[in-house]
Image (cartoon, rainbow over all chains, first blue to last red):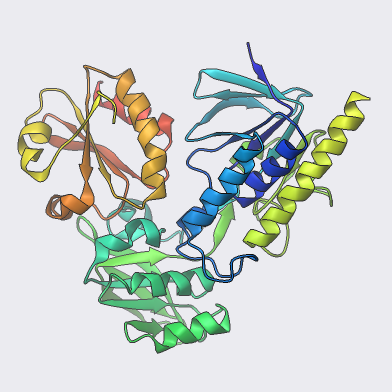
Length: 310
Length: 110
């Protein structure tokens, strides 16, 4: 027998947990499904400085915990570390099978599966993942104590995570395609003044090379188009994110970047199916915009359920 | 940790991993590692499913740095699969799905 809910939220990041908070406070039977632990990208961000209400920096993992705690306080159930092994999102009663065992149904679903690190798409990337190549500084930084490492990227994540990595590494060389950072001015300045951080401007990686683990990085100078190889103990890649819309392929239309198109109330083309947070087609992706999406989606779901019951 | 998973140290590696009769899965984990925490319940669930046929071990990376370095492990979590004392198949790292672990373990038994 399938367990019945009013709302299934897929993804326990800021968007999903905020949607769950609002839905649970409105007395909707709400379950949040996540492949891992709650928090989404926030939980592996070492510090958050731009979330209102935290005048001092807050650790991403702490903020993630607080989001989850608040949603649970009002009765939302968070199913951690589960895998959706089958589902039907197009039907009126939307159905999920969890870990091939448990079945749940709900008339409304908010998909808030967020985004994952964008791979560089260059030779060696798949082979060396976890062998000197990482996309998570908080997870793997400590492996590089006293090492000379490289960071690829120049946006907020790349520069902030480089600063974090200086706690462990002997040196951090940032490889950036432009001749200035895209990161916020304050963060960029802090990085440029850090004695452990060097920057290789106007360069792009072309291949990861090595035997059992990454030993060298082939880079191209974008101005001269010369190639050369850099010795390295490890490489961290922060070159943006790609939406995690695997669940929605073939269910709702995606734009050319793979993002889900919704209306102003976060509704997709399928009745009862909503999308919120980084998977949505939109201009800006912040924790604050994700929680706003989650709020709107939950309020829209309440209205949808009221109308479909009457 | 469940009864189906045993934590080992560097000194146990030769005997428990390379010398094991059954296929072995080794999970390198760290503290302050959200994907490691997320993996733990999935690892336990799969370990319970294959009880008696495959050994599921855990190695705490911070306490066994040299072993991690020797095996070229630079990411937590990393799952490594062994059969007959040799590493086989692909390693799994990062956000690991339960179905990926299951598929890799099933491949050990073929």
